[in-house]
Image (tube, rainbow, N blue to C red; front, side, top):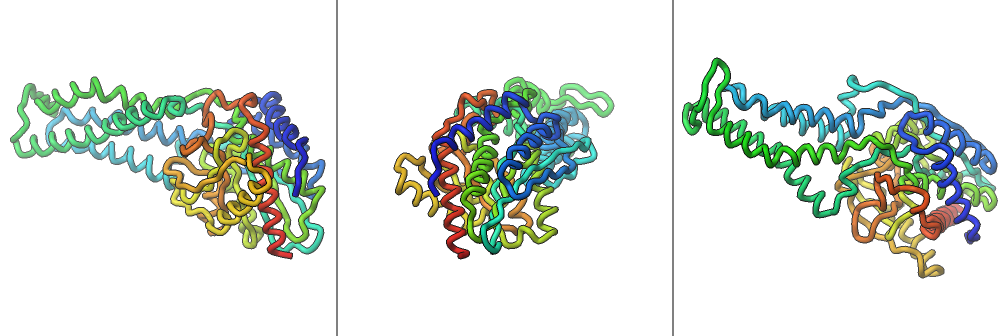
Amino acid sequence: MKVDESYSDYMYDIVDTICNRFGPRYSCSETERKANEWIKEELDKFCDKTFIDEFQARPAMYPQGLIKIAAIFSVLAPLFIPFRFPIPIFATIFIGLAFWVLYSELMLMKGWIWPFFKKKKSSNVFGIIKPSEEIKFRLIFEGHTDSAKEMNIASYSPKARKYIAILGIYYLIHTIIFSIWKLIGSGLNSGVYSIYEYYLFSWTIVDLIYFFSLIIIFPFFIWTITGFLGNAVVLGANDNLSASAVVIALGKYLAQNKPKNIEVWVGSQGSEEVGDRGAEAFVEKYGALGLLDNSYTVVLECCGAAEDMFLIERDMHQAVYDVEINDMLREAHSEVKRDNPTLIDIRFGRLKIGSCDACRYIHKGYKASALMGMEHLKNKAVNWHSINDAPNNINKKILMNFLDVCLKFVEIIDNKYH
């Protein structure tokens, strides 16, 4: 499948138009909805069928809401230390609650804290390209329309991020250590030298050391927390309009060069940045209809500014990405690179921090993987959650690289099912 260079302009124009016409598109916002309506109008020009699905999400819950709740528990914890036995144990309990919120909500996406956050309406948009002959298999390609709030910590240098995070997390460990020290020492009346006692209040040498050390440690904790709590919503040109643009271009090309036996769905999900809620709703609806049983899903991410292509093997949500899809995407990359030596390289790896919509398919037992643009030898996307994620930083050549690999992947699958 050979694509002419006009497609690079077409994809760039999609990114540029949406950014300039609608601006930042936070989950459940009016601009997210309008952008999806615009994408549907574009898909209407060449798809056999298009649709918009609406669903409910809680945009304030993930990730900022859970971070704020964990931070509240962590900030309240020290207040229990300068008291008599056994009250200091509540400092450890509160830190434990903070860790529980972070792990269960950020890593496992349990959604147990939903009562604190309002429901709002979001949407997904898709188009379907039917094959020229019998449908024997289904391929789903998706990007996402919504953009994220700025993550200040992403703009720090790698070394600064490392030390800020280490000292920020140490604050939690530090509080647990002194909470238990105070608890045991005051309970046994040993190892804790009292300075001042009044009713339940008990100020000791332990308290003095602990609170004095907070002068140095606590600011790093606040620095870490605020690093994840930016207010500005970014344009999201690379993350992830670039992927949506590649997907739309993929549909446009396949509408004119139909696969023989593969039905292809191309779409852009909503509310990805707040816990992959669009993909969750999509999988729930179309999985129940049996339309995902005989399918592969390829989630595209950050396709407009990259030094490498990255195939995810495992993410922080304990999702193991499909090996079969990854192997065929690597095969597609190799075939394209044979004809185009300037194609950026591809590599595999694990995302210790981060994920994408693919995890929602995988957790429900469907075959899915992700092809993602990354900085060279770093598991970080270019201008990730940054105000620099704007159309002027999109590279048309990179867009074409991803489109070429996706088209070759479709060709490989179609040949398999002839």
